Structures are given as C-alpha cells and as structure tokens.
Length: 434
Image (cartoon, rainbow, N blue to C red; front, side, top):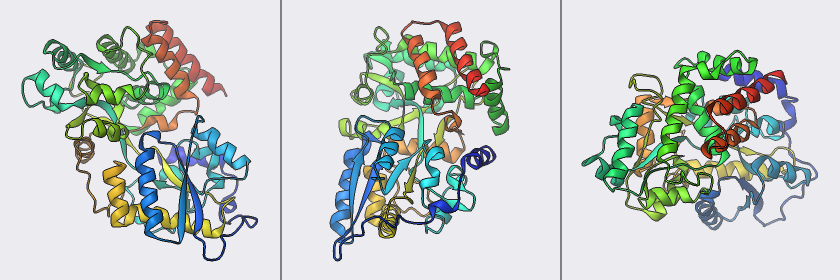
C-alpha cells in the first residue's frame, strides 16, 4: 500500500517546504482573547455529538475557542476549495481522498506526541517525504450490520455471526428473518452512490486475493482493459450476492427511494435484520435503540466458507485531521494542535471520542474502551485478523459516483448484468487511458 501511495504522492508533491510557515498576513488574536480556530467536519451523522464535545472544550479552558463549519449542501472537496479561495480556510479539516489535491496546503504534524502511538500503516497515506500531515480520525468498518434481537428470533436462539460464511447460509438467514416474522423484511439497502459505488464495490476488488500485490494488480489490469469482469470468478460471486440482497431488499419495489436516515431506522426498529453499512451509523442506531445489540457479518461471495473475504469485513482509516499551513496564524496552528491532542489524550476527550462520537481509536495508548456491541464486533474482527483492505482509497475521485450510478440503475432494473459489466469496464479503461 505504501509503495503505491508514495508514488502517487510524489507525483503531486510540489513543495515540501511550502507547508511549514503560517500566513504572515493573518490577523493575530487580540491580547487577552482566546485564539479562534475552526473545524470543517464532513460527518453529518456525528455533528451534534461533535458540537457537544467542542462546547465542553471551549468552556473547559479560556485560551482557545473552537467553531464548527458544516458542509452544508456542498461535498467536502468543493467546500474546502471554496473556503481556501475566499481566504477563509478552516484551521482543522477532516480530510479523506481530498488529501492528494490539498496536501501542499497542510502543516507538518510529525513532531506531535501521538505519532509514535498510531497503528502501524495508518500514516502511510498522509506521509509526505519526511512530513506527516494528518492525524487518523478513527478506524471504520463496513459489512452487513445486523440487529441481534431480530436474528435471535429468526434463528430460534442465540445467533452466532460465525454461522454465516457462504451465500447459501446468508440466503437461509434472510429466509428465516421473513418466514419467522422476526422482521418485516430481511435487508435494507441504502441506494446512495457512496454506499454502493465506494463500499459495496470495495468487496470485489479486495476479495480478488489475500495478497496485496495481486489485488492491486487486478485494479491496474482493469485500467489496462485486460480484465474480463464477466469471466472473473470473484466479480461473478459478488454480483450473485448483490442479486441475493436485491431479491430480499425490503424496498425492492422502489429501491432508489430510501434516504440515508431510513437505514438506521429500519435496523434499529427491527423492520429488517440486516443493513449494508458501516459503524459510523451507530450513534443514530443507539439513539433509537440504546439497549440493542448489533454486530457485523461478512459479505460472502461464494459457497466455500474458506474463500478469502467470506469471513472478513472491510476495516480501514478513511479520514484524517489535518491543519492548515497557508492561511492560519502560528497561534492558530498551535491551538489546533492543542485541540487535537486534547481530543485523544485527555480523559474527557477520550470519553467523547469513544463513547459519544463512537470512534474506534488507532492509538495504542488509549485508556477509554468502547463498550457498545458494534464496536466490539469490529474489534473482534481486528483481533482475529479477519479484515479486508479499503481498496476504494485508491479509486479515482469520480469512481464511486460512476460505479454507484451504474449500480443504482441495476438495482432499479434499468440495466442488466452485462450492461453493468460494460459500464464498469468502460469507466476503468477510460481512467487507464487518461
């Protein structure tokens, strides 16, 4: 992973030194006033919890005042671009794939005390030469989330997630959910392009091989036009599982109608037993069902339980906290570092981080432990090594909207399987020719 990222970063790296100085024209804080800093956060699902944490921080000291910038109706990259163009860059930004376009504007954080405590490999993406330009936000995971109460009823006892490792086992489970009356429907599918195009597609890339080089070669070969997806065993299995989910989708008569908020409601209220989504959804689920038990199942792509991917879920670090180096003052940059360190090192900050924001720490010195069942499920996959790479980190910026649109058409029966294959192959070959 680091080799590919290193080459990508080197290609767009303009100046290592450009990120080391603050804006000399920025207005300094007035004497006796707290240093004002801002945070741009793109996770709307945790914005209220983050606001609560910031309010606590602001009232706990008088040296720094943090304000929050929400995305509004813009995507993260457009919002960042707009703010930089208007000389109003946020002091701190939660950044994902936008990093490759923005990294020259960011501060070196390699001297920060959290650096030696970060999970191995999680800084590769934000390492720029000798500089480290991002602090991992959290570990995230996605797969088939389940409501244990529903699955207990469907299975007639204490549901064991290890019992689902094949497509036939998944089909049997979904049959039981509906036939037992445990839920109105078996599964909820969120039709957003990022869920389908970034997360669900991740599975057919990463399941190609347990060998990192081989699965990245598959992605490269797809760009070269040397892959025939219709003859690819993993892709065919992945499509068969999509067809299974499509057949049991509670919204199959109108598959594109649900909005994101329908997902946590459907799972937490027991309308369905399964939802393809990630652990970032837990705060909303918890609000609706604070005593409920939840967990993850893999997305099996074959009927051989031993096949790679049938026992694993996708786990990775999708986003980083970064600090502006171009438009912020030295005092603001110092305050930003203090706030970030407070979040991950103070007792109060760790409590918010783990128990309110439901972030899974990537640091080995955290004392706060997540107590919720969904986080425990993710940790169990991590401890057993049953995790899949987030290959979507290596997608071009327009890949998930493009593939997501094709998948939306497939879900709505606007195109068939061969047309989906043609659209996927055409997209990747076009990327390879650019």
